[in-house]
Amino acid sequence: MASTTTPLTQLNAWKSLADHFSVIQSTHLRTLFAEDAQRGKRLTAEGGDLFFDYSKNRVTDETLKLLIQLAEESQLRERIDAMFSGEKINITEDRAVLHTALRAPKDKTIIVDGENVVPAVHEVLDRMSTFSDRVRNGDWKGHSGKRIVNVVNIGIGGSDLGPVMAYEALKHFSQRDMTFRFVSNVDGTDFAEAVQDLDPAETLFIVASKTFTTLETMTNANTARDWLLAAFDGDASSVAKHFVAVSTNADKVSAFGIDTANMFGFWDWVGGRYSMDSAIGLSTMLAIGPDNFKAMLDGFHQMDEHFRTAPFEKNIPVLMALLSIWYSNFFGSESIAVLPYEQYLKRFPAYLQQLTMESNGKYITLSGNRVDYTTGTIYFGEPGTNGQHSFYQLIHQGTELIPCDFIAFGKSLNPLGRHHDMLIANVLAQSEALAFGKTEAQVKEEGTPDWLVPHRVFEGNRPSNTIFADELSPSVLGQLVALYEHCVFAQGSIWQINSFDQWGVELGKQLAQRIIPELESSETPDLQHDSSTNNLIRRYRAIKEK
Image: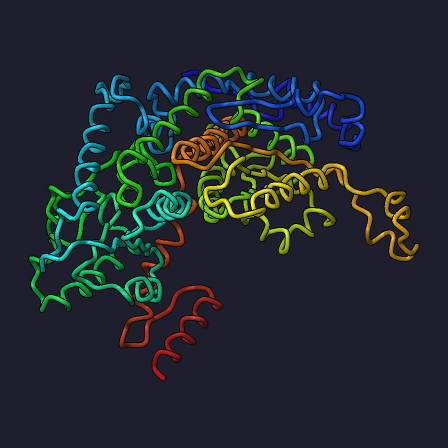
């Protein structure tokens, strides 16, 4: 595929945006709305079941034209086509990037290294469906003959954050006579609390590790195995009835005691943080059932097709990416708040933190040069209305510009009296308050004492997007996740970085492997770290010996 050789800041559109910014940077949203009565209707887009209102952004038609020009000069369309066609755009690992294949219909053809990967994807999905049905209807029994009612997913990173988020998001659709727990942290407390009230005879563990060597995951998996064997007097044959694997390492899975017939694989063209709709989502399928899981996949695919085919002017992931770049690289904003006004999405911001920051937290370009511009926006958030009583103060009156993504739904899955009207009133009020604020004159008109007036003024001009759908469903969740996946890719393509590797996580893991024996050694180790690390190791060893 063609690659952009011109540095980002040397592109014509970038230079034009810099000039344009000097003209527009102080323009207030009050002015933009006053000058265009149709702005709130005009600056919207739709994709799948999602309605996207971006009218409360500090942009004009000229801004949008230049941002789209930036996408075109960055060869974003070519990058999109290359990803969907299976080209190896993850150049540092020489891999295709095909999470989109995980939700492709059976009749699609996607060639990687000369092979159509779609049949293999559906073979795994079919096996997952058969297994899930057996567990959910009670046909799969534990070692003692009891039905499985507890499922514990053991993974870390994308093997945990996606399944946790999806379970919480789709709990309304889950089988309520089953309990689902998630263990990721190597801190023993995570495992101990997860299984404290569970009966081993009724518990199934899913061990999610592609290589079956991930340190944290395998430490927890071995602890889980010991916990199970203790309940069955050390009978190793019990493991096969209480453990399944999401992995590609059949030898290690078998050595652990898991029947490889119950090993569900995935491929090196699926990155961990893009894998929740692969076999990594086995716990999700067990919770909500195969039909709902397939509806979620269809939602992913709907957004894939929107991203692949919609013109940039109406392409929601592209518009979101361009707006974030506008704020990050021209206004100097460093973060984005994701604010779902839906309690079921309480883990969505945490999931997005890995998706966005592990993908685009890079300072080296695809050509191997250090960037001379900002990349990798910080994402954070909490469900509304909780966040309003936490960090919204800083968004409204702080010195940082923090663009917001509000997510809301027209219908509640749990309608209770006035609750939903009050919830939606709050999300609409927050975006309005951020945009338009409250002037000094308005505060004085309320009879506020002069000395208090400055404290009660809201400058406004704080940008936000609003993403609206009728109701949270498996399909809509798939659309939301794919929306942010593709936004991340569009951001990375324009920043000229590789959104699909994660070398930055390696060094700390390597150093930890060196430090572990220094903490465990019965002899005083010869420490060769810096003076701070050496001192902390000695202090820890001293505490252990007390």
